[in-house]
Length: 498
Image 1: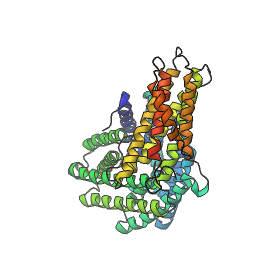
Image 2: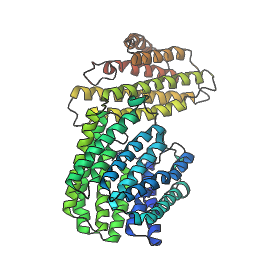
Image 3: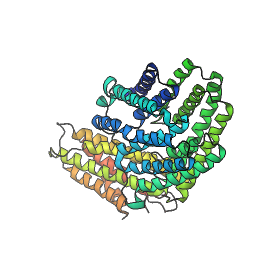
Image 4: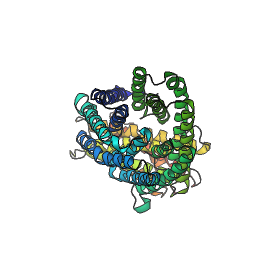
């Protein structure tokens, strides 16, 4: 498992266990049924997992808005329980709207997921209209408990605000990522729904759930295919663990509750760094819940694997055949945005060192970190161990390494600019110009980056002791020049620029 600087993931995971545990405990104390208690636990988990607005105030508002989408969808799913054709059509509409809502940023993303999962939970628990009052009460209790833990008892975000997510790539109509993906997910979900029901009239919803979660936080064909592989891998290993843990346990309440808490911890601890480990924890948790409901057996777990495979195949076919977006197109867009951010951070740093108080490079540096995270996600399919193209894999790794070097130089330059005692070196302007020229060459495709190499070699031989800002600026220009070779590849490779 990846390192956890500042123990942020550990604290977030422990807080999630507390929030989910409080929601379930309150439901039990109020005498709600087992189905309602499970609904409460899942609602609290979703509220803590999906709400990711950049400020605490916006997180509070988004959490408060969850019932506005969750309650109507819950009622719709329960009322249509006995009308399969209408139920299926309604869920596909919810799926399209939920993905489409991602265009409105973190809030739309969270509301879309919550709406989808309310429909899913209704199928999972086979809820009927008579249970709606109790399910509404359970969901309200859960959201109150989750909000209390997150914003009152353990307000981590007040100390360490979550990093702002980069703005989505621009586009209109079907070229907009959210619109295109809404079509893809709906088509894939429709196919998974039909095939899943052919395999099982009771547990078909796992195929649809697989499609939905594979398309969360992906933007290209390669990302989606890798996510599908990891989904299947996590499910298979989770089912194996379910055979070893959940089946022998037989739904014993106390031990099951303890192990579910461990799974909740695992979901939150693994989610930022490993999708496969997160899905393993989700799969074991689902197996334990089936045990509590008294329906768990080996055949059910094997069916779960089959339904997951169906969903993954449907997602793969949809992302490949329905309005496909090639991986290199996404790579191109995110890398260029990162390079332009490097230029902005450098320019602001130099202007700050020159005495311009209004110039602040810190926001640009923070944006660069977020963009590099998105670049890593975009390039993940190319550096995956199973990626078949060695040349592309090597170039992608080279690009990632150089971008990390560039980010380190930017951080150093921003740190120097923040020092009130740092002086302005007259040579900084020339170094900044070379950074801007290198970025322009890399993003415009005019091929001028290599012309800077001779100047940089000569300048790097000159001493610049006592001028750390100049050293960072020159180092940045050098890194950008070295990026020229891996980025200028033929379109048939993994094309960063076409």
